[in-house]
Length: 104
Image (cartoon, rainbow, N blue to C red):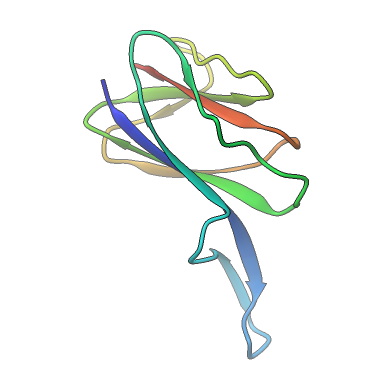
């Protein structure tokens, strides 16, 4: 079982000075903490029609498989693997996208 924290955040591509800033904004659009298990667990937060959103996924206390989609189901040896203590970023593929997690 792992604690998985996810955020949906925008990329702020321009600083006040006009320089490029390819990093997520400091205030997420949405956030949720999930607990993984032997079964797939899906988020209630979903992407919006606002383009330029990214998922940031942090796994604590265990490795997890993650899947994305309108009704995602995370499966063993499928999708993306996020290792315990790791944070990974993923671009949104579609409006209404959710994330699902499962113990690895």
